[in-house]
Length: 328
Image (cartoon, rainbow, N blue to C red; front, side, top):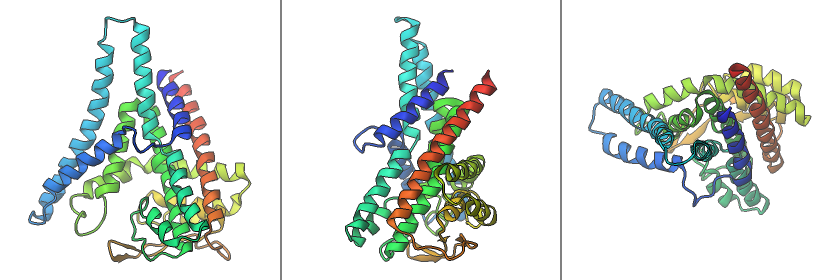
């Protein structure tokens, strides 16, 4: 099946190449489009109800155009008749593989995490704060080394679902067009899905729909991370108990699933109150049943990255197997 082959090749490319900053990437285009639309439509003078409606308009434009461009691209390639059909198929495969590759963020997460780890090892806390600020939404200028490590661990855990399992799920479900549409949904949430005065109205639709599309992948990620704990020899029993007890200890209906498994496996207490845009946001703790929680260190980040890769491989094998069985 061509979609499975494209996903497998895209997965391998991502683990090798990551996200070179100078390469073209669909998410960069999505980000520019979202920024333009938000600048034009998210005006303080507008009423709350109007801004919520305009948030829906932004969502429809960004997600709809993302899906349509990819679908039309493949349709256009299929219309090529002046070359052998094998060449057309090869072109579709190359384009599809590249799009699948851009949907995944395995090595990208690892690379950004290793930058933070190197800064912490060098004793440069300020640089580590700036680097973690590039991958998390919270304020980072006053974080301690322990808090920087926890922020990194939390974002790797959360993005094991958002950046790996969810894209795999939607790519295998509907091919590159659906995979790119998912990336548009997730990018909208990351850019305007904040519950603050500036984006609370315009980003409401994006935040809620991201919760919906991430529902199944988050719960699959819970299973894949638990399997990763067993494979890596981590404390699977504690990971399971914390995963059951604290999986809903998050303002997001999905993020707590992956973070709870990681918290238990690594014997950490994650979550808790954080500052966002200068405002203290009271968030529940994850890992509340961990006996004598350990301090988050660079070693804990390394262990989280190992869980990321193990869960990614387990998820790839499980989801591709289910896809092949379904279409057999």
